[in-house]
Image (cartoon, rainbow, N blue to C red):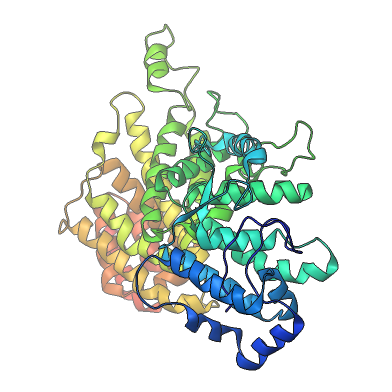
Length: 512
């Protein structure tokens, strides 16, 4: 592949950002005869690990002496198929990360300075609804912005194209690769590229700024956690002290985006942002733990009506205490179900089947074994919070399972369901037998077990028919110890013909 660097000359069809390439048609024909495939030019690159910038410049001078001056764009125009090789090579070199940065100073490389401050303001406006801080795009002082050398070469090549039907096919090829590369490079590479392209094509501004906003989440797990919290608070309407404040799908996904709305660019709904950035989350397997943490925090906020601990203490000291700030159990359960549905949806969107299986087999058992009682503050609502936590986790687990496997056996994924459900029920049975010591609150554990079993009996009876009867009998025995005879009988009665004998024994022993 022909490789080149930018130089200060402003002559030629490539404008001010010229690349060394191939000259006249006759000389290009020579190259075509010698290099059947443009990839063969890659053999000109030195193979050692010494700094590449000087070697590349030496290579450029040699090519210039033989082929004359022209732009890399001309090579792409003459051999359109080589664009794929050019993009592939620059992508590989960006990934290697051995190049010195290119200073986008407006002389050697195009400068984004004219638009960079505006881009930063718009990024802050877009992310204002999530509580995420946008890192500064300024490098400090008078130093120009920088890009990795191969990325600077690639973006400079793209902005030499005119926006017409002839060049459109080239941009369709280079554009996705450029966006992917920019998203993977350190901050603030993507906003710099967005600034350069927004100067060239203003009508693409909204798309470029929105894409740049996603790169904030690519390198920092803390801002992803903040985005998750924003998804829950917006959906549940917990930004306000009123328990009846607005929330729902409209708050989660918003009602549109763009500078054409009144007031210009508006904050983007957190749900839309998460749908765009979750694929770039690196530690996907740990996302279930974070979602569980945020879910539990949301349950606590639901029980406290979204009030801060200081305000709750202040209300308790008044004449009527929390009478006018408390939420009814029915209203709280309604919001708990919404929170659990959102949590299950996020797990399924983020990691699919494998993440759901990890949640039920690993994450939830580990959570119950760990000590979380210190998270429950003392007071009138601590018992309610503990109970709501258990029900929230029960809904969360069952809904995640239904997203992954379905409620019957029609889905191909249901073939993996038996081992996961049986392993989880084995954990429940062992904990009920006293073989596993739990660190969670007793009210949380009891609410989870009764809620999880009730949901399976009422909504997913096919799951129970696939589980070993011995495990079901142990769970049923534990429920009887809690005086939950009806639920214990329903568990066995719903589990198919193989559990009929155990159900009959339970009826006789309990004297129903």
